Image (cartoon, rainbow, N blue to C red; front, top):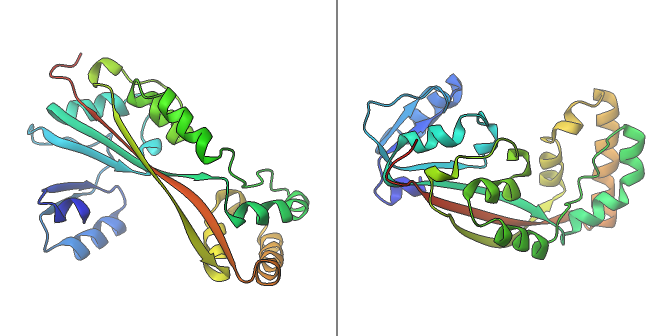
Length: 228
């Protein structure tokens, strides 16, 4: 919607039939085409794009082809723009995870959930990696760390970031936790009991709310006029 509001024509790629249908329903009156396909499977009509944009999704793409396929879709000097949110230390979610460490251990949850980096460490890593977009994105989305891009396809990226925090009441905090894969693979009864204890803890020790610190990161790299 933000791109559309700026006057762009958008070709949106969505591999799921239900979500593609929902997108068409909600955006049908706007200048958008929803294609039911993966990024790797997308083949346009030969007209290059000014921008390829992915938000909190680039790590899902095939690591062996995603950089080159992005470059192939772009007009000379078109841009690849990647956005994501990184969790950093500093919110009461951190205290909550430390308080529940024994509970997690008994449930067999190996990841404490506490962020590994503080804001300053993340900023330093982003500055150090700023020479190419693949290195930047390995810092921004560590799950993207894999096959390196052919950096000859892109100029050095422009990287910006913004730090902020979000307050979750008990229901929203538990709703967020319920989306995390390590909880989803737990035995249903064990997860139900664990979540009941966590809910009580948030209400009683954290006054019914937790805060989480985020850094939103945007990296934009223009394609060079020629590729391999």
